[in-house]
Length: 165
Image (cartoon, rainbow, N blue to C red; front, side, top):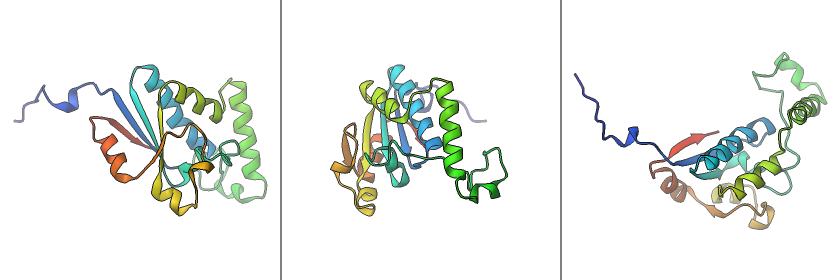
């Protein structure tokens, strides 16, 4: 029979949260920002690492224009095939934004500002930037730095709770 090691680092309370933001749609931008602001409010050190389509969350050009895609989204309350009809992406996005406005939910831009003011660090993925032909000038001012996988792994390996969204 195996005994439980009460000195295990896995049982310690972790005060660091590292989230990989890999999706660039409106519905996938809210969860990491909500977790980041909550973690920061709880006194955690929080890092957000934006990679691949998650770069849309920190691009000046797209942060205000993210959409929700009804195609391939099994959680949408309509048959998936309807998402292919022209205008459905715009309709789904408008419906979600209206619902969030009714809940007094802050916009993505407001959540980014709140998170950064709370000390959340924003890291852009350098290989994703190269792949998408982006420069630092293309990014919102809240982005703290541009890092690669080695630096991300260093952040994530420091007894952190690590999430992939």
